[in-house]
Image (cartoon, rainbow, N blue to C red; front, side, top):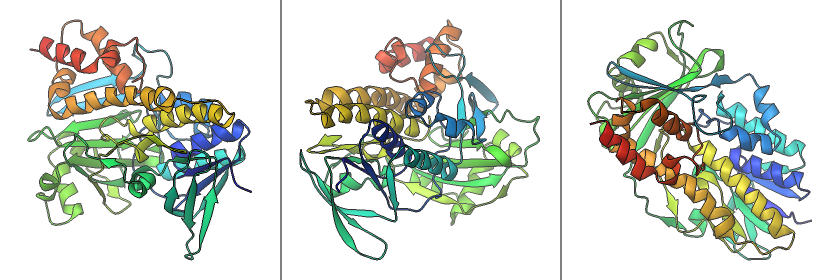
Length: 406
């Protein structure tokens, strides 16, 4: 029997969409290429994401998992340091969240979607797609090389960096961001409890090049995610191997290097390059693209999971109406609303790399407390809060505050 909906990918977007649709009474089949648990980078959630986990009935799974609490971020450049507490924001809603190990987090969400009735199949690779407004179909290959056809009433692509439908349907379009790369690892950080607030991530700017930055994300059980982002030629100039590059780059961070002086690496140094991507359209005949499968900006503000969950919520609500026989305007009900928040984050990412947002963060403009609360709201993920002028017109207001900084 054909499912109502096929979801490609069992990451956060796919699992939340599957849970919402299964709760609404529809049959959902999720096709995942990997086997869970599996490693994934992107461990720092934003408070806004908690709303969509709760909506999908998956929040309790996350709360009871014992992940590291998160209430903000610390930004550092040389000896200058600025702390942002997400609870001190203008938007209503969650002010805290978690720093998660993605292998456990993603598996929790997938099992939660299964509990609600979604069927998840692992080791499945989608190799072809035939769009159709009524009965889109996929060719799926298992790990033994066997292929089968799956037809549904609608397909959601939540394949993340795999970007399955973008590749199969030639939807890729140039991004406005230059190519960047990241190298990263997990360590036993061995930081004494009193030396750093583990409830906050640390974002450090390279003192010699403000387009290179680092993250340090304390996790539960004494682990820590750490990495660096920059232009590929810059990163590779620091050594012949990823390990040499990461060690040399961390040595330039000052405070971060001091905090991790006793750290012991527990996994190989990984690499992601050329990750920024866009598509010509987020929807088509019988399909929609969720989260990173449609667009990914940059990891600097940890917006990836938040955008993914927002897309899952929007798509599930629009798709429920579609499956009930209503005519859905996917641009008005899905692509447009999703893009408004994405564009807010895009303005902040652009401001980070051109230096204007760094100037704001490390300066003290007039009326700093009120302005900081509005900026904190966006950093906490509330990029769809139209009551916030830094959401309604982020470029205008960021430029205004930059000028106030002198």
